[in-house]
Length: 432
Image (cartoon, rainbow, N blue to C red; front, side, top):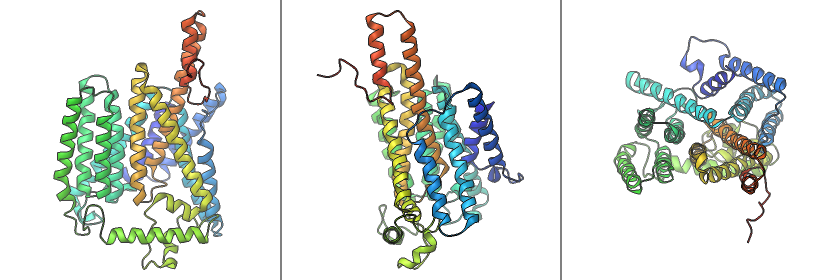
């Protein structure tokens, strides 16, 4: 029951319940998340189980404190409360994802939940596009609802959804169970083209190419080459449709949109120079940008720049530490699991999260997504990958210790030390 509530919390973080079910009133999501956290905490206390050891956990909590301080400096008490309430949801999601996934199966279900949420957003986006196109915000481009009611944001969600769907596809047992995920990947790709987002579609193409090339499940080089060729052909056909937008000149910039982003970056750098400690205040970039030569209010169009300009160098540094620590540990687990045939599923899932997170970070070089639920879903599941791997290593070590002490058991214990992502010890016999 507790895990079901955790998956519901994850699902409704991305596909907001108030948007999906307009008849609902009150803080439905906050209620579900709070009940889940209370039950989770009670279970941990009753069994005496501490939270999983994870280096980036302290950075996440520190970032929330800095965000609150950046708002507090403006003297807006209501803003501080709103900030803490909003980021409390992020902290709850992160904690639940890291510690509720106790096995590879739990991790797979978490990724499936994210994919299902993106699938629902895709369904609702097409419903608006086909039945009420007058509600679209601009140029007839496909978009969705909630956090993703803008074409570029929705394209980013489709990119992340594709990376995770491909990972779940590779771990699905049997051909029949793989078919729905193949169809979902196809639906996400077609939907991305209709968003006409240049960065989103380029990111999706890179994600799919990398997923295919490094796929542990596709062993045939010929089949990989065939899929890569199909991807390139599809992208070639999609480019003319994307370039049919009236507000673009070339695929890689050279238009007013690109120039405005450069101006916003320049303004952001000056904000950091003038407000290096706590920034101009969380969420106040657009309100301050006119003081730095911009004619119109505009967001930073770069996530790291936005965080640093709004919350100061301290906030920007903590944000970078969260990302770097997550990527380092995720990469390490992926490499370790890849070298162990018994951990093939963990390797596939961690690879999907890694690809999705890198794609997200590249895309947000041109957008502001520090509070995007998908980012924190990726960071949380990346943390759970580390914790799950640690559990597997500990289980293998315990099994080895309970066996008769023979040379091969001793070698197994040494190998387990090598696979421990929290250990810096070099196993004996590996040097020279």
